[in-house]
Image (cartoon, rainbow, N blue to C red; front, side, top):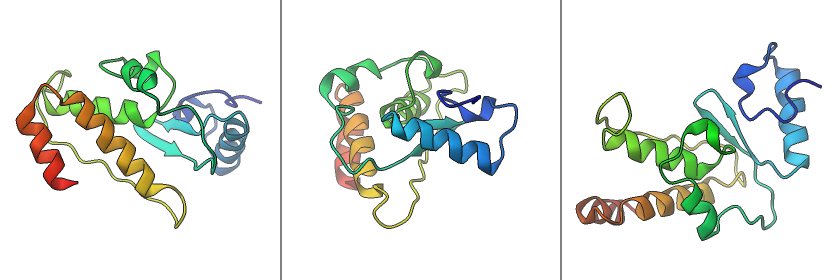
Amino acid sequence: MEGVFQEDLATLSDLDEKSLLESLTQRFKQNHIYTYIGDILVAMNPFQYLPLYEKVVSEMYKCHEKTSLPPHIFAVADRAYQSMLGRLATGPRNQCIVISGESGAGKTESTKLLLRQVMELSRANSQLEQQILQVS
């Protein structure tokens, strides 16, 4: 099956509901709970502990290229942070991250993880860190 282990489903030759669901199901069975569809990160709640959020993983996703590591919420946080600071080709830009899903999907946990990573990235920028703390 094409796309089972593809990390960005936007690259599938046929992106329809059936292929999307099959790919996500197969990735989930392999504990690949994050999948890109272009700039969108799909996260599936594993309802179990996975070692995806440890310090070593957090460090790996600092200042990395999107395609160099598997999809992850830390990658979204890093890309937003780098874009906000103007380190990407677009120059400094305000950022907005939308977290959506059904009840029990893991929205609250995803938000906590995302904010934790942005806080980690902004440690050297005390003004930004204070602004994030006020929002949290």
